[in-house]
Image (cartoon, rainbow, N blue to C red; front, side, top):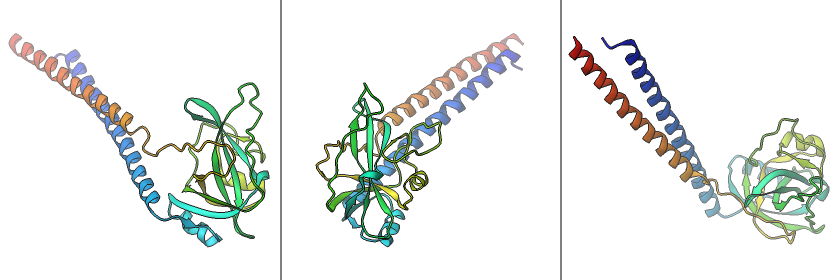
Length: 241
């Protein structure tokens, strides 16, 4: 029988192999999930835009996301909120969310109009991103939500204020209006000076696969070391008998 310290070392090696393989599998799944989302995104971009002209249209779109959309309506500037801590090119800024009123009685459509940098000298200053009071055509991709940042406080805040995350229920409480359960990432230019640099859903796939390769390589190394030293100890123990 092997000495207790050798048995402990072998068990530690087996545990290390199991851990590193599971971490490699997790990174692989993360990469596959992002690749699948990108395939959905590419499929959505290949389809003709869906028109949002009624509440029924909005409900149908919410059930099939993502998809390209177009709507003609009027921006509601007083409903704007500024989503904080969004990075573009390593620069912190805000994503500007403004609702579009398409028709009387139907939910507002929340539009992510784009990104603007933060004034580092005054964090309370919000970007100037004017909108026309005339009806405007908005085109873009309807997505389920904005990526969430860490937020330790209650969701939401006042309209025309700075929010950490966009929460539909919190927005409805603040505005007193119903909103569709999606956000349109605007792609056409409406002369507001905002930057529309949308992150691809598959961003980071190569990184996840690289991490997976590292974990699997470490698992293979641990397996080799465990077999080598475990076998060496077993042979030495047999010779001493």
